[in-house]
Amino acid sequence: MTSTPRPGPRPRLSDTGPQRQLTQRSTPELWGRLLAGALAIPGVIEGHSQVSPASSRALFLVDREVERAPQTSLAPGRRVEPVHVHGVDDTSIHLCLPAERGAVLDSLGWAEPHQYGDHGTEYLVYGPRDDTELAIVLGIVAESIAFAR
Image (cartoon, rainbow, N blue to C red; front, side):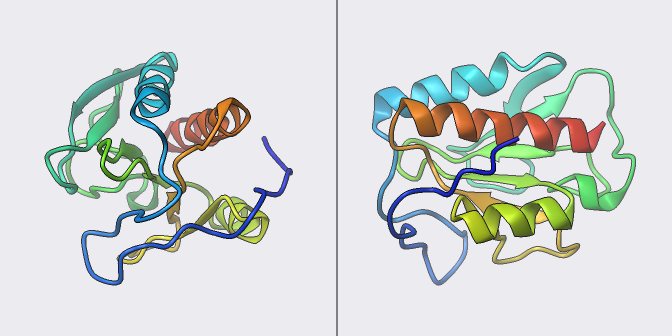
């Protein structure tokens, strides 16, 4: 669980939907490692996002179809989708976290509230720019999976 500030200014995001990262994106190679690392988290399976563009990859829980509470999924009322990784032309991640934790990550510069969040638990996490950031972002993704459980 990181408490390290993200160095530098925040990336620029789109003003209109879908919410996407426009600057400071991951390289294609780093994005591939982000996706592989996210899929290596125990108890998740990859699928098509129910709420994000087709280039996004959703993480679903292997052992849970229905969310334990609506604020733990990006697609409440459907198969529980706590995380989706946006495509290589974006590289940010949408995920759900406890509101207090998301606020801490926002203050540290790693994330900001989802443009279209309904529960105050939906956040956009910026795509990692290097190996150090990759490890931190994968830790945040793991936190989201644990929150959904």
